[in-house]
Image (cartoon, rainbow over all chains, first blue to last red; front, top):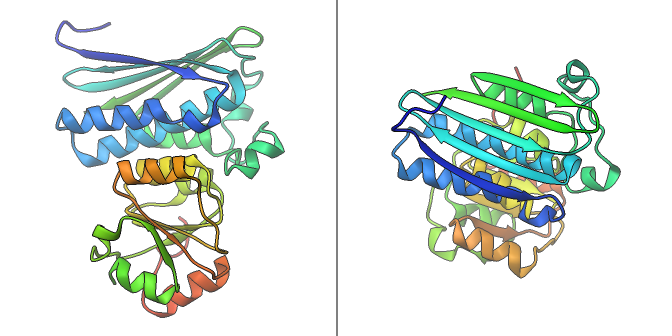
Length: 142
Length: 117
């Protein structure tokens, strides 16, 4: 639930443009800096959000990234209407990836994205339905 | 060492960020897999890589890195250079292959972070 004094922003993540992937995370990092948050939490949010944003582009043809900054936490919500994750437990395993060879050539698809999002956030919630899409929520305590 | 020292050791061309060459670099990492940079790198302010797409700059940005050196004479396009300029990241291009580039810097005292946990 949003508190009345929370700060919100959101981005459309273009799933057809790999070059622009990461723009939402880059902008979020800048905004968090402007808000005066400490460097450690900004870096954790930036890494986790960027991993999620890349996932949205390579697996789900984009979606929406929402950021909410409350007094005591930051909530990142990444929502797509892509193909969904069939087996979340398997997807969470380090090294497991369904990325294509082309994506690997660009430096991604090592199967570290979701585990790294879990490592950098204080709470990671994945809600996914095959054929309908995925909602990833990451919470960072301030 | 300073980024200027890195330029000399790697026989590198400075693509952008001339004004930051006197900044200090205390450690570095070499990797072509941005996923692994995001997952395994901790505080190294410099990346050596053979990839030249915009996600290399975004990865460096997320990791608070100050300098990216492209090995094997690779050079990014103008869009990638623009992104690096915008975020004050120094870009270098070295004729050395990855293994040699890392070796030259390592033996000159620029270390990494040792073994993974």
